[in-house]
Length: 84
Image 1 (tube, rainbow, N blue to C red):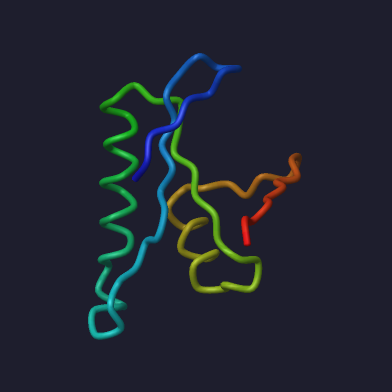
Image 2: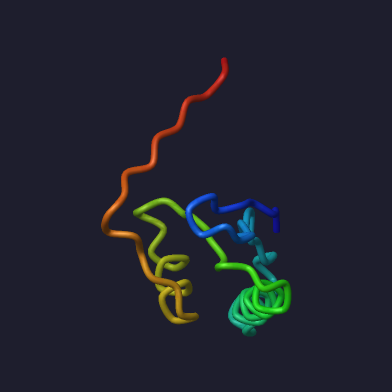
């Protein structure tokens, strides 16, 4: 997790990046446990929230995030530039 800051809310936010569970250990609830621990940490640090992202076609991850209480943002576009 990486800390960030919301200037509009004047509060810390957290970015959950690179959640990965080895193939041999998938289907055991480890992902949900990790996400719930991250959410607990965000609450404990009085953060506005926790943010993550995944690709649109990552069906398993998208189902996981919705099942753990995340909501897909419908009102914003996100833009990236990559240094090459």
